[in-house]
Image (tube, rainbow, N blue to C red; front, side, top):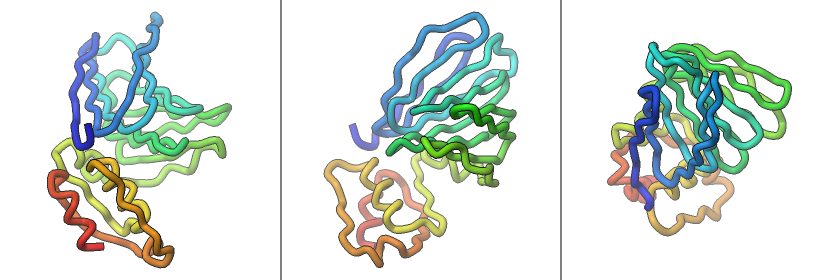
Length: 183
């Protein structure tokens, strides 16, 4: 259901928060790590410091490993994964490339490899958990894609010049339709 979010508690006190339109699959566990596959959407993972295993989120052709005590966010859409480390440290792997991230760092990966890490605000990355979306110098085409995740139906942008314009807003998810008027 568009706009619906869910919290899931797994073994070893690992907490998952799933954003709207998110699909996951639990995979077999081994002795050293538990695993979930993010098929599409966005999730946040919190691993307690006392966890006995690492936790792996696979998305597309890569995976993110959170060590005990790590908190991280993974968004996977259109064959691109965006991984943000919120606390602790994580390892992102795609093919033979590996990126180590610490709190406040983000990377993306796709078939083209892993991008260099950039600094992000963890509060902005996880604003969705508090029912808020934040757009900071975001191209309107990306804003429309995000709006479409949270509402039924689809907004279609047909103006290429407008699609490239940058947009700033902070909105409650339940008021997401207001973005359309602002654009």
